[in-house]
Structure formats: C-alpha cells, structure tokens
Length: 122
Image 1 (cartoon, rainbow, N blue to C red):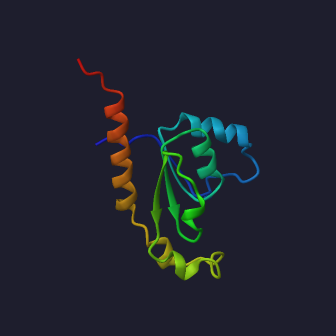
Image 2: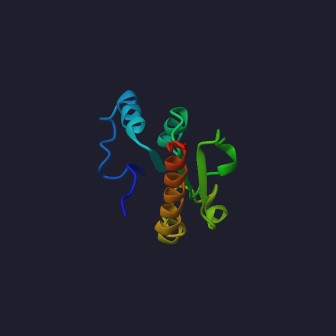
Image 3: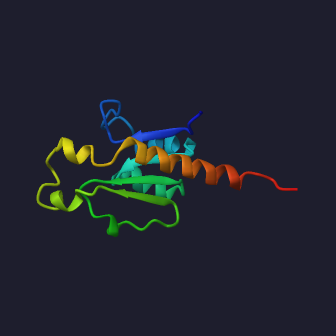
C-alpha cells in the first residue's frame, strides 16, 4: 500500500523554529496532497491554501475553527479535561488519546475522495 505525501506538522525536532519563513512553509504545504497537524499555524496555512487537512484537537476548542470544507477534525475524548486549565501541560495519555489508526483511516478516506475526483468517466 502506498501512502499519500503528508507533512506531519507538530513542530518536532525536525522543525527548525525560527529558520522557516512563512512563505517557505506555505510552499511546502502547497506541495502536499494532505496535511495532518494540530490546531496551529500549520492548520491555518493549510486551510488558507485549500488543502485537505486533518486537524488534531487535543487541548484547543475545535468549535472555534471553521472547516471551509477542507478540514476533518479529530477531537481527543480527553479535551475538556485539559482545556483551558491544563492546556500547557504535557500528558502522555492525552497524546495517546488520538490513535495513529484513527488518523490513517481518515488519510485513506481523503485519498479515496481525491482519487475519485481525478478519475475520468467515459
């Protein structure tokens, strides 16, 4: 099985904070078929570029983000245990509350939608 190009953008050690300019980042996002990211600059950039986006909501309110038809929201079942009082605290259980399989299933769903849009029917 092949997977679509995806940028996993949770600003990890691979992101050189302060070294990537917004226009450079926009160029990278624009090359992607999909984005998977938390509620962050990445999510807003992806939506601005009209990219299919999977937004992971761990501790920020998902109701404040408009989908514009491009955003699939995955909301942690633990979100309101952390928002707003503990939203700046790291918690392993919170991180694990959205499974990789849940994300992958939505990526596959989006890939299937994208593939069907590009088909020509005679």
